[in-house]
Image 1 (cartoon, rainbow over the protein chains, first blue to last red):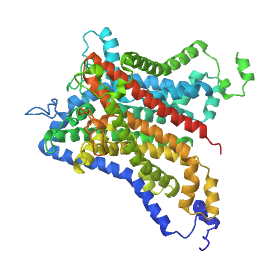
Image 2: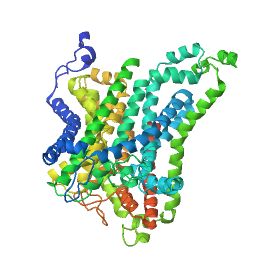
Image 3: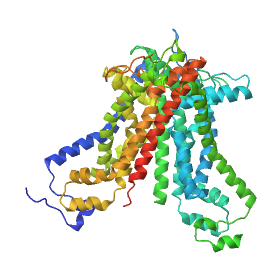
Image 4: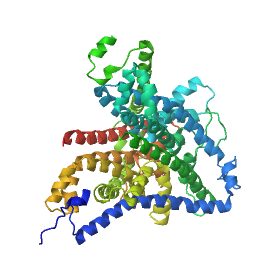
Length: 313
Length: 298
């Protein structure tokens, strides 16, 4: 076997230690690795194609304006109507409740962990909070229906529906606290300590430093965390399917039951629909809308994270 | 007070002024309260399901099959075996693909090449796609187009795509933690890129990879939404017999029992939730144990 040749020229840069002559086996292995990496791209293509094709067929039967601006969603009726607004408002009402819960609590937890907690208490508190992120959503759904609605909310609001947007939103808010706290804390940890020291040197207290220096400096990362949290809430399925009911309801009253885009997909998709039917295609049309909404938010979030990474690293 | 904190200014924390002590203390307590809300909710949730499910937390839970007519004797055996089947196949599909993809991105791809950047941003986005959308993909592609039907294999393929981004991201982090000079040393001795990756970098990163893999599998264990579209909802009172067999899983069984408003089923659902949480907790502890035990200081 001939001795492998090694390029030692300094001009080679980072890869200068690598062999100059490649072997057939290496090329084959490389191809396998590229294929593995390409699976993720294929997945995205798979999602887009499997959602878009039936959606186009759907829109050959239902007009886009009827779908986007219609206020009645009765796909399973003989003369079904496909106005998606009730599902969208249901999604937004529940998401809004979740956001009201999760933004202050998530941000507060992040500021505490990043600015106040000692290293030792952070090592205990952070994983404990992240345990919340590991609880299956079906368990949160059960908790929302059985505990939050039936043991708490019925006592406060006697005329609340058993299936209601409020309990789903509250529990969903708790569910996304770790997402928001964890990403915001990362962003605050990336703020150089020089900025804090400068603020202290001017006589500010910890609170003033946190509010007026650290949070503004980490803002793009914090906004990224918020956006990702909201995207999670919009896409969450099990909590709303279990606790918010399955009645499309064009209403802003959180004490009523509502169907969301995700819970419609779950409910219709778990039935035995024939492939060509309009009801079957409606799953994909709603799925397409959901995918587009969450995709845009995820992209915004990814961009914002890049921005603060570039600024401080 | 101010003078004192200036004297012990070795730690940066002590530099803070103490202008408005009352406001500052209130602020600190508010932050701490924000942190505790999540933790307290978690504690209440665990206490609630444990107390409620207590009467059914016995061996009938895993020796008996689900039953509609006799909730007092129903168990979750088919859901337990179904979960094991689905997760085993998910691991078989997702582990090699995820680890090889991460190896490519971290060790082989030219940094900042167009393909690498495309894959990277794509993975970040896939990690945040709602799980129900993966269910739609599984329904259209695996269940119907490939005619795999409502089977263990359809569920496993769908879940493996779902956790692939998590495996790739955590494996890359583990690979990145291996110092550069180990690779350089190997390459300098004449090893090829693949020899370096497979005999040096990968073995050194295995503890980190194992931790990430277990955590991502635990995500798949608890996942229910995509499986709703993949036929797991049908009433299953048998253990899977093969990859093309019908199945149910623990989260799906919990969901089915939650839908039935009879009190016995709520108790059964609570007991099954405890079982599921214990399973997840064990997986998490193993992951953390591996990480702490084998943490190497380079």
